[in-house]
Length: 127
Image 1 (cartoon, rainbow, N blue to C red):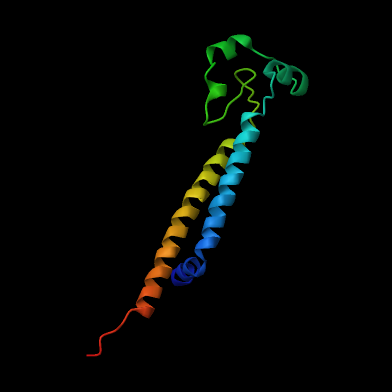
Image 2: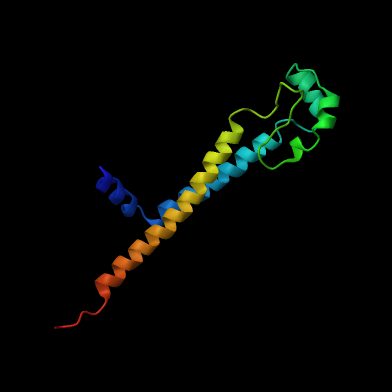
């Protein structure tokens, strides 16, 4: 099984891995954008009218840095309700991992292909 998995990775072209990495980056940006803007422009109005939650101004004043963080994303109405959907932060981690892994695999697949090409075309000594 391990040999089959290894050959599956090698048979994928570097373009496949690079495409996986690029698509993961696009998904990462879209997911982050969705989470960052999940509170809308007026958080108090979003909490009260759309979500039916009490807006706690004292809590927001005490935790004023949370909504402006890049990661993890939080935009809380009060201590118990977050406007950012619970799937956003785990998805950001997964997509970031896929983007990095795809880039590493693309470099590795390119190196393997170049090494095989070099071995095939290098001159051999006639001894």
